[in-house]
Image (tube, rainbow, N blue to C red; front, side):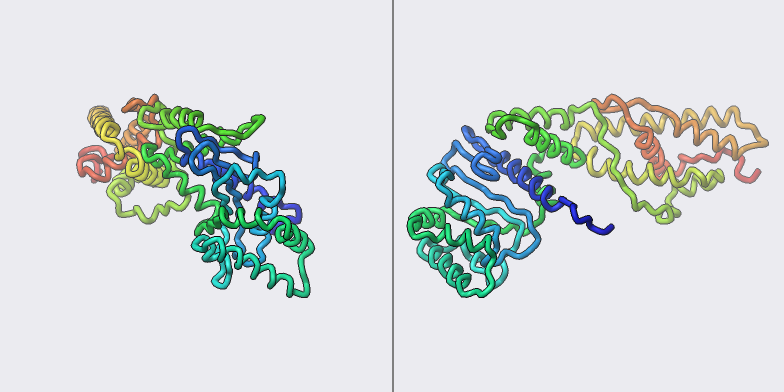
Length: 371
């Protein structure tokens, strides 16, 4: 789709990235610290031993010597109304990569004297350019004003440039592993809930360590193993039915000439196997109770099979076998662990797993294969 002239996606991505950075810093907070958003700039951390101001930038272009992101940040910090004395560190956090020839690449390893020399070299190079950006010219003039040389030196001493080897989407994914106690399938809910809590409307965007820990604990408690909500179904879109043609559970459905249910059976099987691998096997308590649930599904099948054999109509063995399949897959074998319900796809996926694993679990009723 063609990008519209008024598409504001890049701007919005930058705003979202700023809140992701704020959330990341919330996880890093120590006792007594608070994270401030849009108070002194993008993100500030105050109240601890290393008060820090962070400017976040989400761009794809390389970080060049004359990149306006750096100079605009320095220019803002040069302003008299910016309380530089509050901070011991000033960070430019950007998704840009410093070019091989860029002065910014080795910036953090330099001492104050070398940092000032670097800034002046870039300024001299800029002055020699015939065509100059008016905006950058105005910023350079303000930054290198001789009357503010001490302030520039103070900024240079405190300035660190962190070029993240990532983009905003990857940065978001890195946050998913912040709390190891949250199960894989619930991690996005955990981060999204915290992000929503941070973004919620308020007079001042200030998050104390105490408030953040309390909120994070409450959200985590709801999502951990004591949750009564069954994990969301994974959204898989690339399932290829033909890859499961030789699986036992598919062949057993074909034995009763019920091919129309195979796509759904495959879908239930794949989603259930993946959910078990990602979610249920991580907790010993859940795994043990799942095994009991699996036994109950098998018991229900065997009861239905015996009953179907007793009332089997000899003239329509395949239809009766198909009825058996429908009765079992429509069944509800209760739940397990602390979940208040189990979705039908999971129940049926467990049934397909059993059919795949056990030779004596079949749909074709006894004694009628050759009739």
